[in-house]
Length: 147
Length: 122
Image (cartoon, rainbow over all chains, first blue to last red; front, side):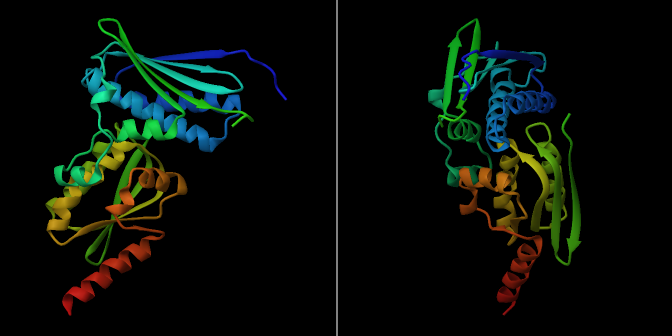
């Protein structure tokens, strides 16, 4: 039984381009694998991170390709946390309704699916926006024997 | 960079689209083009085979929503087949099985088209 309470941290900084999504996923995947998380849970984490970063690229930076996205991983033997920081337009999560597929069917578009996936796949999803400074999404997953 | 590609095979009146690799916000336009081309050629009976798809995000799922109504208005359909459990779980989580028929194998999906056509021809 491990009693190590130490929190480790790793960071990746990329520009706000969709072709960087795979690099972000690989970064999270390899770190989570080192920590010993099961691949099934890692798959959920990387999808949630992909959705958060896609939203940042499309909405916070409105597809401007030179914005900065900082992906910070903090992990102990109990918890794996991903902090994603951007300097784009603040995001108001309360304005995003849960997805309604019947409505999307009629409108030929989808929206809010990513947000719904994040909430479904992670244990905690938290948004913080400091206007004029930065936006931060926190995604965390409890890991280890306690869960 | 993650790779994604599509290929298309004609099986009678039906077009089978094979997905390979990673389908995310970056690669979704590739699938959009493939489906858009089929529609341009009035190919409305489409089976999408997910066997070699390693990954999908909501941007990939969104592509199916963009075309489905037009296809059904033309008496066609997009039927999905051969998904890994991992990919199916994402479709399921978002409620897609209510809107799309999902089959274990490509053959089942193709057969379903033929059966529907037979019924219509009666």
